[in-house]
Image 1 (cartoon, rainbow, N blue to C red):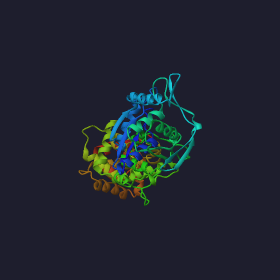
Image 2 (image 1 turned 180 degrees about the horizontal axis):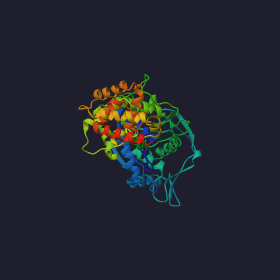
Image 3 (image 1 turned 90 degrees about the horizontal axis):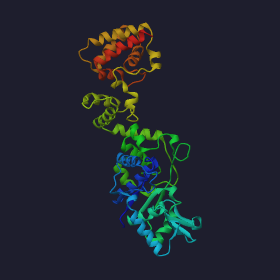
Image 4 (image 1 turned 60 degrees about the vertical axis):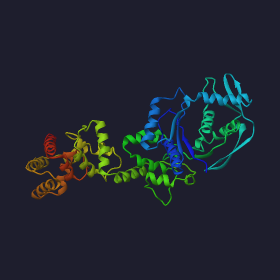
Length: 433
């Protein structure tokens, strides 16, 4: 069997889009499954629009996804001599001609048929494209010409790309034949669409991989989700590890219809992968985010952060839930939600109860969860209150929010000094309302 060689060939004219990332992933999984070679080629001949910032985004996004090239990156901008040599062959044989400083390939009128591994045989009449520009007057190759030369000379066995490229394939087949190159196998995978069945666009939210990384989707979860967009491992499996994906990947299981991006499914998968992540690893991921935000110093208390991680482990959808819903752990005084304050921190009885609670908590030697709970429940019983009548105001006083992880554990993690300081602040806030 011939060696499998595939390539991912982005152009650095924008960030790495979810659709392109899935194309890269399918190529990579196919190569890994077949013990083949995955090549990264940067198609940067559009010098006006190419930008190093986009190149950096593409490479860092691929690194985040764990997609590593076996060869490359190769840059088309560094291969101009190769294209000139190949175009000269066509000029010498009379198959191409010079026109106004450009090199043009007049296409013979015929029907071109190529086989697609997903869509079967596709036949196109070449009168739809009577001439192909190979080299522009500025000396740079066109997309179709550079693509054919590179795929042939890099010995690409399978071209796996989005089905928006189907229109380019007959043009490329014509050029393969003219140059005497063997034609690779083609597989055009359906595009990804949004909830409205239109092509996935920024209008429907994030489309760049970097944005999902920033929000805090795990690499394994995002790869798991991307793989399920238009492909299935079989057996109704959804939670699939990277190793299982490699083992199961087969182009015959790629669906022919467009794949719909489902944000809820991505969130569910990410929450499942978070649950599978060890507390130690999750705490490291949290620390990276918190240090970057300036909420945590480099010499942070690792055991303390692990306690927070343990508490949130099964409650999270994405890593940014830590900053967005649990910021109170890292603030001196929490940011109070006006609605929570209005609902639970008003009236003289509340002020008195919080003062009394502060006084009793201040007497504790140990501030563990059991000791804290015992004080709160003792006060509830003594004042003949319902538990929620005191617990809701305490929660708002300490977290600024009406919803939080289990309160007594939160109190123990915050620690005695911080709890007393916040209760003091909340009583003043309530007394002045």
